Length: 86
Image (cartoon, rainbow, N blue to C red):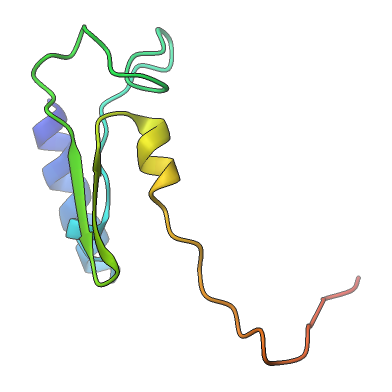
């Protein structure tokens, strides 16, 4: 089931302009906490995720590692700061 979902989501994100190779797909169980903070023994079939982007390659096995691998967007620090007010 995971591979089917990964294939469908990859197809969708490609259509909207994202590179599927730069997206980490991690099977988790929020109910039981599997693969969220540490590798789960209940998913021995999952060997880990790999993302490839222009800044380099990242890999891991659980969700927290995938979140830690997200690169923050570059901000134009040489320009004035703009804050919207309401």
